[in-house]
Length: 215
Image 1 (cartoon, rainbow, N blue to C red):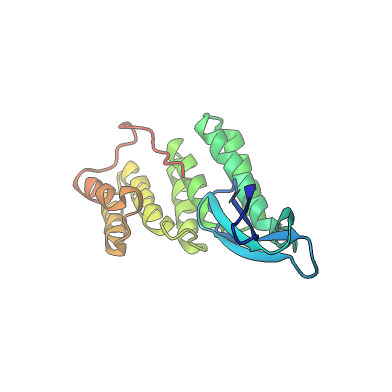
Image 2 (cartoon, rainbow, N blue to C red; image 1 turned 90 degrees about the vertical axis):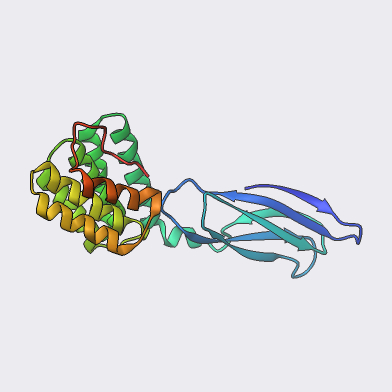
């Protein structure tokens, strides 16, 4: 964490700073403790890490000694989730670089730790869609839809990409059915509904552009 200590006119102290986290797809609470001089002077606040960073502002009567992130070591107890995200992110980076075999290996390693992780299944589906392995792409998009659907935007985009895979195989009827499901969800994350309209009007063509939407 980056922080600074400010002394107020009233003689108190304030610790102001920012906690950053490097894991995408994680929305975790984290405790921040200000340890100060004096009996029982330690103060702890809980931050909601909804984004890549969160700010804190802790006031103290005693002279501050240090800021402790996660004083109760709660992060250690959720380390499997962190590990899954870290492994999957390595897969995404390999996918960006065109190292498809290594990307697949990383995604599959992540799924061994969490078989319900829709986010990992979705990206594995994108990997197979990019390689035009449409049957495996469909399997993984369907697995994403059957998983934990965290974050929520996965549902609409898994439906869209499942429709893309059907389109690529020439199965227009099933593709349109998937686009209609995506439309009915109403979710518009990252232009989802615009994509739905596009593919309802014109079948997905893998030759048009690179498929993978890395998130």
